[in-house]
Length: 99
Length: 473
Image 1: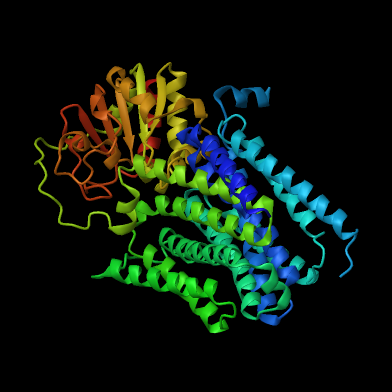
Image 2: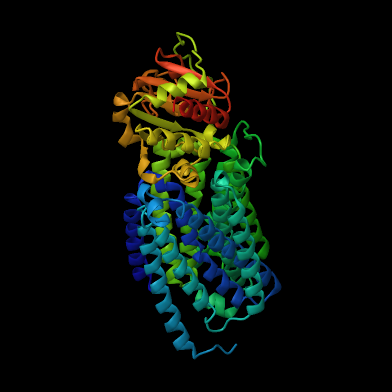
């Protein structure tokens, strides 16, 4: 990738990350940390590529570990974040559901 | 390896899907900033992850598909199982664990790439300039620290590692490890054919640094550290994204890196600790400074009388702390609160940023018990309201309501923002025994004229209060 273009991407992504988080209320900090933890689970696709291109045994072993860890990050991050967020309800919500 | 479609079509499809992944991630995180849309946010981000993962199988020139599927099944299966069974009180250490796994994965990618360079395979050597090697090494360093550090954080919060290890000159040792790791990293970048032993030593040192950095940090400061490692993993992922020329990894990694850094600062600020302070000194390390003496006595009250007091109040503010969660009392407390609301009492929950083990953790625990989030207020919203409250009910919280944080410059918690429970007309404190709080500081709130102590296990006291209020009819 062109070096300069990559730097543009970095700068814009950094702003996006900052802006997205800056308005989050404190009550959502724990799920949000968990959610951002899930997002870097995209490392899984990199680990898949590393394993897919590995041709010696040490590379395959490390690549395999990488995919196991990456999949753990992505799936675990999703499951716990979803579990936490689905519990958040407003006062009126429960009555609406039962009605 | 013959792919499903011609190479250039596959590459185009993958690049297109990664653009969608980046879009879905950012939209998902944005939705997570409002409690109403938060659930939708994680589902949107999850869809992005699924698309990215499926499309990545199409990369041209890949093999080892059986290994890949097995690895995904093992990692994903274990994480799914553990994520479903973990109790809400244990959530912080699970986040640390999954985060460590991400850091480890980034380090593993770097290891494969650095090994290929060390083996000097022609195509790898040609593809990688010194800049790419430097990025790979930087990601390897940060990812490894995040991996081993997060595992230590998990061990500490899970109670597997009981004490904080501190010794004289610890900072010097850490500094030496950092210097050695950087030196070896530099040699990896500058020499075209590094020996495999050099690569191994590089990773060993980085992993060791994560351990020695995290071991001395106390449990109370751990959330800040976990958040910091979350940002670290994001950066490591972004660096490896450069190495693999993977736009989705770069964008997601940088977004998490910057969001995580901001979140870390917010947490440290809420705890009245600077980041440097958390990382480089243990809490309460020095001798405790002489603090103002306490005057007055602890005045106990029976649960039945306390119940009457609350039933006839107009406005009650409940201040839950981690002690309530440990006693698993949040369901009973919410039952008590519903009873008061039915009696026409105006009721609010006041949450200190560090209630629970992580900012926002108490909100998750209350949400689990069924408390609607619009009854929950944070420190800035609620502090002005204590003056008009008839009763402030403190359950399992201690340091976060200690007025010495406002008044006593000698106190270790001086300057920490606190909930102004002492301004309420009456204060009821539910407490297991007479001991001091987590930090060992005497709480002056407990000795005030308008404070009454209800001794006992939080769950049992809540049940007694419910009984007392029901008895009034």
